[in-house]
Image (cartoon, rainbow, N blue to C red; front, side, top):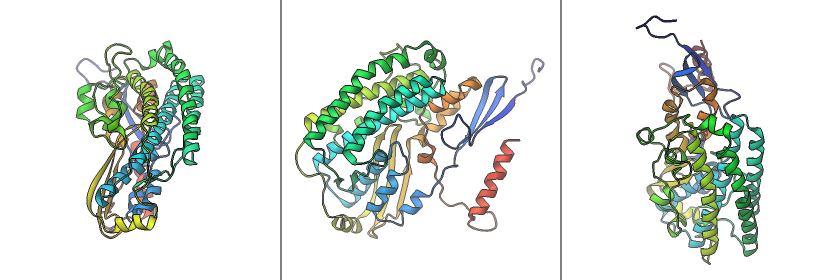
Amino acid sequence: MANDGEERPTTTIPIGPIHPALKEPILFTLKMDGEAIAAADFAPGKAHRGIEWMGMRRNPVQILYLAERICGICGVSHSLAFARAVEQIADIEVPERAHYIRTIVAEFERIQSHLLWAGVAAHELGFDTLFFLAWRVREAAMDVIEHLTGNRVNYGIIQVGGVRRDITEEQFALIERALTGYEDLMDRLLELFLEDATVKLRCRDHGYLSREDAVGLCTVGPTARASGVRMDVRVDAPYAAYGDLAIKPVLPDGYMGEIRGDVYDRIVVRLIEVGQSIDIVRQCMAQMPTGEILWEKKVPKILAACRKAEGEALGRVEAPRGECLHYVRMNKSGAPQTWKVKASTYSNQMSWLPMLRGEQLADVPIITASIDPCMSCTDRVAVVRGREQGVMTKEDLHRLSVEKTRRLMR
């Protein structure tokens, strides 16, 4: 024990990059004062796959398949953001009906993503019964997505200039049945998540992120809104059909009193947004215009327009985790000269530092999970050069990675 005036001794505990509490590779380094976290740091970069590098050697239609595979949960957000950027550069006008179909698919993706996160959060709390219930409810959204697009993951419905598949009147009935089923189950989910004494004990006043820190660290999506930041790309810079719909950012105030910006408020925002997505889909179905779903049905003509395109653009969408950006620059070569992706987790991951400070070691899993991190979306590398040997080989990178991990774990 330290004497008065002396700094208390601390212990450094590494968590990751592979750990049962983490769903993707990332290394946390926690400086512990007993059971309390005195300081935290993290090291991403363990899941880089070179997707942007591959994309700059393909044409925009081929890149759509890569963009959707950046993330297995919010793939349509990435393909839609990329398509929007290309459409701006190539001056391609998306039919109005396609905008509505894009919105419906995006909102079903938001529903299944939020419910997937809710199940993972329940699992991190040790509440596996609630985990299975949340994922059983999620299955209805996955079934609808499969019925509309033919796929449960990587839907392949976005095309430059519109969408690949229409939604028929017969499919409207299926969508309505799924939405009604959600409404019947949402009250039960809200009660279990928000009224359960154990969930409140583990989540209320834990993982605190002030509004000032949320703004200063540039957080986005439910993480920012749970701290009282009223921001949502669907409202602030409407795209697809959102400009025609009644929608506002979801904040946690009004449900459990004042906004605290804790793990509990982040649960509130995501569950309320499931109900909001149900309402948005219903609005789209009621207002669905008739007409074409694709600017040009023949892919060669789409590619011809892309080959003539020159300039740069930014595609912005509100992914389930928050604002997702795709920057594209084209120079009449057919393939993008530059393609850079800024996923939501890139903006949110710095919020871990104030969230973890002062918390107990046992609360690390639920606090880190509360921003709904996706490291596969986030990890990026440009060019890595050694001090002497020029561009590093795969073996060089592997050796340095192993050496650094060993140093951090000493």
